[in-house]
Length: 219
Length: 246
Length: 52
Image 1 (tube, each protein chain N blue to C red):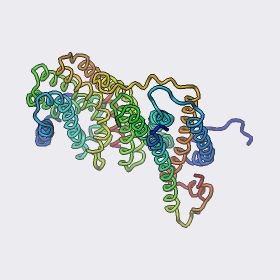
Image 2: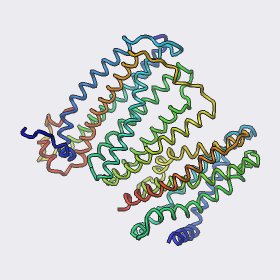
Image 3: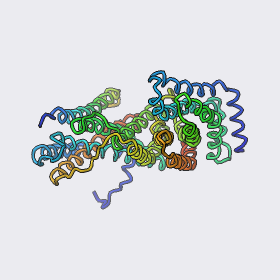
Image 4: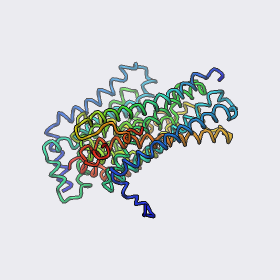
């Protein structure tokens, strides 16, 4: 059932791949805007790169959240899904997983390439990918709570941003911190470990909170 | 009355609480005014001057610290009420949470402004990204999120419950956020602010605590008033309301 | 106040404005409610309700 749900969502996402690609291009665009706005000076770019890449990832994640439950909510299939005897926790986890694969993994892959624009070293590029790999699932997990709470509301996109960005801050600090540390020649290990810990904790709690929120929004 | 013990449960009903709250408000208002007067008098006229490099702007601390604490306490209280309202399906508890949210947000904002006005003469800058100020700013965002979410939902019970989830998630996150910001701050050695190093003389501490108590009394009065209006707005159709108004 | 009067007055001023504003908003809310409750079966000018 879990596998089936993931597969179903992946196929649905493929059918609406324009939406998915939009998030991806948004990320690329935002990251590329900063050098244009700030100037091409190498040292400066190198120091702002971690923050820029991570903030762009946060924003792109938030944009994608509408798609997590939105489509299913609109065509009524979400209600049906809520009625299945399967534990809602697993259902939510399945949806978040496919959402992450579709919306976030492309960011993880392209971010190191964008890092080249900022003149970063190879080690740094690896850490960018690694920190995003650990961090983006957390963004999806926490974001799911916001998405579930704001289902069907007017201006839900903006509202989700308002709700979820404060909660994203620790992930931002740890993720960007890992990259910053590498840029300065220090070890990113403590940050990455913290990111890992955040991931584990989110995996346990977030789907549960999301399920509660879904029930509240859909009754 | 012939009863020896008060049946507290009856006040869980909005109708009864409405009347009780109405009676309590004048008392809390009076105590608030007295405490503010006493506290400010003590702070400005009785307590000795501050030593060290704080110069003369230390008066601000008498309102800055209480406001910051109120912002934090009220958030916790709000989350607890919201949780109770959700878990026990108690409408009144949820209404209390909504009533508290505005006051908590205002105190948090006051804390940010006064903190900034304190920082300027003390450290020369209007804003510093130290752990406390940054966490207070994030707390304000959490309040705004709660308030926005509730305003966007028309169905009152959905608004109550959604707010509860958000408030509780926020509550759990606050220590995590504080820890991460503290760490972030210690790594990016920008500001060298230590709020420590202030030895408060007992009379100064007393003034501050009295003002803190004043803020509490104020909050109670204001929240009780607001929850009464929330009750009136939500229970508009209820017959008891017409009776109470008549 | 050693020249920092502006900051101190500013702080307390802001506090007064914000807290006072909160109270004013509550009073306004009460007035709106009373106005809305003007209907045949309700007596709006009841001192019991206007405790704040």
